[in-house]
Image (cartoon, rainbow, N blue to C red; front, side):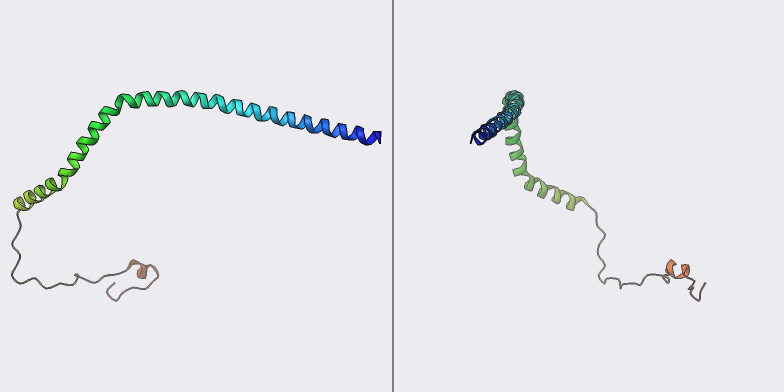
Length: 121
């Protein structure tokens, strides 16, 4: 019976030691993560202060862009009218020309590569 008690105490001590090592390892990981998050928080605060400085300019740019975007259809229509009125065009013929076939015969280089030549060669 004493051997069983001693083995039980050894197992419990080993379990507690294993848990202590695990908790130490997890604590060091969490400490590293906390350090990195602290550095990231400083960077985020810097970005926020920079953004506060440029925010009025961005609002002005967005308002101006909205005005320009609203005027684009009108400007496009005016430009189309100018181009159409200025571009000289030849008058279309009253009777359209008939379609003409391509001139000459078409030959393939592949046929001559394999030794098949036309009668004209």
